Image 1 (cartoon, rainbow, N blue to C red):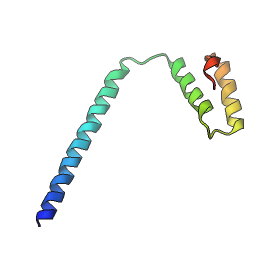
Image 2: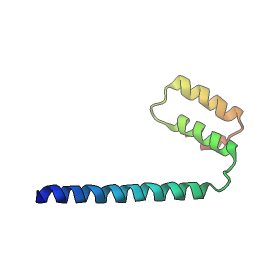
Image 3: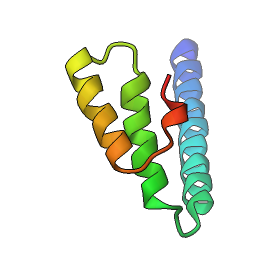
Image 4: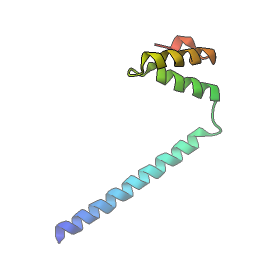
Length: 79
């Protein structure tokens, strides 16, 4: 019985800490956005992450690279 109480107490405490961290990080993330940035930078960042991902197939990498360059993103960032 004593172990069940300890386990329940630990479980409730872990849930409280976890939910508090989740809410705190969500608030911080929402506060940090503050009106957003340039959508072009976001689009270029997504395309660049696809290009630099090591398991991307060569066909997809070639297509995404052409989109990246056609959109006017910085070609020096491609590795």
